Image (cartoon, rainbow, N blue to C red):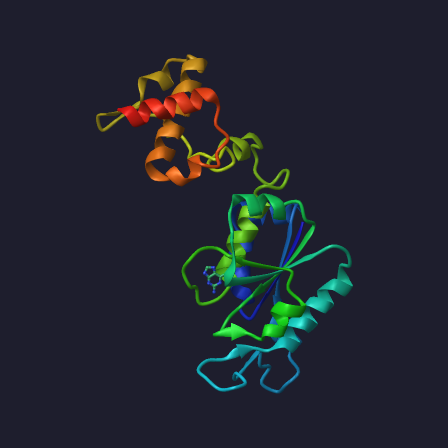
Length: 243
Ligand code: 6GU
């Protein structure tokens, strides 16, 4: 899968995309992540990617030409279906479901907004999707683009060593994860729950499910409304609530 990230700070992207699981996925050719420097698509002496707003007012606005030119250059290099995503606090809130949808694509172009805003013609005539990563304001879209790349890339076949961990973790089940422990079984007097040492797989499965349900109920009750729950889960939740 190809990710092209249009930015005036390509170093921000490179600093992250070369490391850890993303870096390894890139080396193995499972993903291509490229930071495209918008300054390379400017034509004036100062290589400006922004300008003052028509109508006056504070701040600077991202110019349309470098963004259109960069996108068109990418499209001529790799024709075919592509989503052109603008990272902006005005976008649709990013979540695991959206990550799963994007993981079905083969090419994403991401435009990182900076300054006070972008020329509206970019949004109207170039962009296919607008994404926000949450209700707070960042200084630019780069960290948001990286969050999206990371969440999408880890869903692609082969990117995580152990495929099963994608399916058992938080959110793919619609619930928060159960607590995990490793050796030693006792640390500073703190014990690992007995059931996990029992070797009884059915009991362990039941305990973990109970923990997931209990945690979700306590920390993120909103998730229970859309989580796929069995009749047994519903009975357990009812019992927890009655305690
Ligand atoms: Cl995508 N961009 C910026 N600048 N701020 C944000 C955001 C994006 N998502 C949340 N806050």
